[in-house]
Image (tube, rainbow, N blue to C red; front, side, top):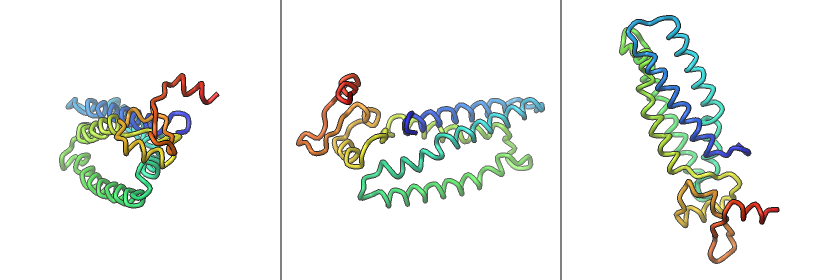
Length: 179
């Protein structure tokens, strides 16, 4: 997270997870099931879980702790945790009939059920998730207050004790100043 950044890990993880869900869904389309298709679907689902455990899963906790304003941090964490619990209950309710051969029996096509939700999360995080790496809570508050686009957070150098609060700095100028 320190080298790559939280936003990049989160967005990349969601992109990989969406791709894996679509692949599993397409592998479930053929009506005849061969052991090769079943094993490849299982391998893709292991890749899905590995990707989640390395990217989206742990990064979420950092983002929830860093992004909200200091006044709303506790309320935001509680709201996020409650939403996570509700989503888990819904997923645990839907997964058995998706996989059960006597119920919906979607098999690998169950990937098509979860892929749209993953795509929505990917699109939202691509356009709306800022990069908090290396920012203090005050700097984040100023960037949000000035309505800076989430994708452009890294382009602004915030000076919280100045009257104008921020200035645009090119990457080469920022590197020159740091040296």
